[in-house]
Image (cartoon, rainbow over all chains, first blue to last red; front, side, top):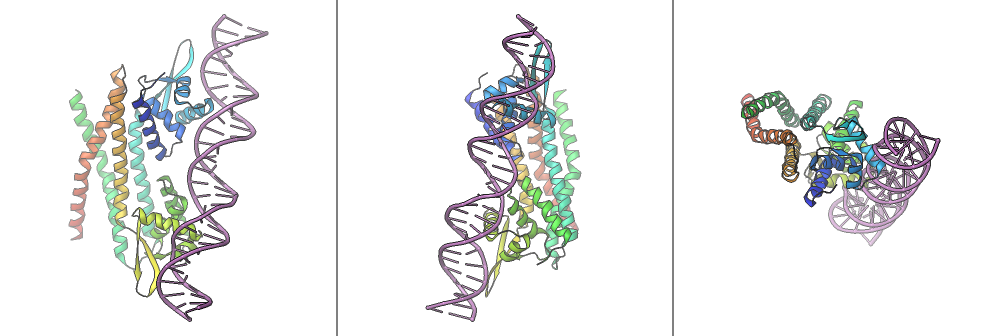
Length: 157
Length: 157
DNA sequence: TTTTTGGTTCTGTAAATTATGAACTAACGA
DNA sequence: TCGTTAGTTCATAATTTACAGAACCAAAAA
């Protein structure tokens, strides 16, 4: 399989993005190739050879991504190969994870306020504002998402 | 300076959180101590000794955080020490960075759609939905923030 | 003028991460 | 039953990171 220069470039770019999200370089490239390749499904061999990563690294990356629910595969009768593709639900998950992450931060910050004893309440106030903002966001987002879904389905139907 | 067990625990927890955001362990702990200590401002020495990190690591961490705008310091006449504190604007920045990050992802995904040529449009559709969702979010968030600010100021005044 | 304070800068290195290649295995095909 | 395919597992090599320690420096104090 061959990829255009633009596709190779995007794999790297997406790869770096996902490295910053905590994925190993090779794992991030595997996600990248599944995302940008013209074929929506690729075999172990195609991934390994096109990305120039060893079989072991490919094996580890694919199993890791399978375990974390980022990819899945189908098979075809009379063909021992597995055909891997990105799980599309993964996009929504990516967003949800970011939101959960802010929730975690918010929990930590709430406990910070309980634990530290500052003489000047001005310092607590700034933090309280941010906490309240995150709470507000959390309360409003579901409605926002719902509304988007409504508008989007309207267009589609 | 001494910290309670709960404070030490929170420094570690916040530290791990910030490690996941790409900060070095020691840097993340420095942010942590500035966040949870009873005193809102701490000196180089207090930070270094309380966290048990070397002067060099402390120096690097503080300069890194100063350069990236996460902390700032004040001085007092006749006192050569600098008193470091977390920049409170940093909370809003943290949130903004998460949003910018989703914007970056969105840009990459838009280019993916331009570059890959898939026979079955179903695959593109899923991606298009997510892109459109992120765009929607981007368009709605400023209003959401504005509304929160309005409500919050109302309470305060 | 010498010493102390409040740091900074420069190696060196322990530990962790990430990937490789080779040996291995299970299933199928000839 | 022998070879081939489609991978997995293991030992280890190559980087990368993250920090400590020591030497260093400028300003203030003694």
